Each structure stands twice: as structure tokens, then as C-alpha cells.
Length: 97
View 1: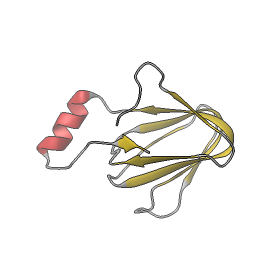
View 2: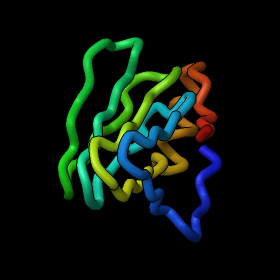
View 3: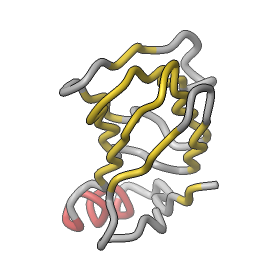
View 4: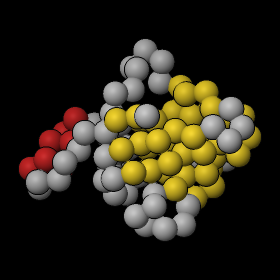
């Protein structure tokens, strides 16, 4: 996913957006603030409050938008989870933009 392992927290200003690509099984955690997580391919979205998390359910594009200044942590799935996903023929290389 190209996240910095030494700084796993992402600071988003009000209305700031984090765009995730091909992030299947990545856990988005709201550390502080208020977040709106959207997977356009699924429609709708989910609001996260501090301490809540959401696992990205599909590859493709996911958006994390701060509804107020927020601190986000995106946790990649364990390597064995990625390996089993690859064995099923699903691409799992996520990148943050």
C-alpha cells in the first residue's frame, strides 16, 4: 500500500481526502476526529468515530474524507492474507494518493 511503516498515522485537515487504490482488507482506523469512508463500487459509505474501524471490502478505489480535522491509521492486512488473496488470482497492491 506504500504507507510509511515508521509513521502509520495520517493527519487529515477538514475536508481532506485520502485515496486508496487496490486496498482489499486494509483496515482504516479513526484515531481522532470524524471520517467518512466510501467505496464507490459498493455505493454509500460509513462514518467512523474515534476508536472505530472499517475494513476495505473490494479492490479498486476507496476514499477516506475527514468531516473534521482527523487522525487516520491505515493498517495493511498480514502478509499471509495477501498471499492467500494472490493465490485466488486477485490483485492486491494498494497505493495511496
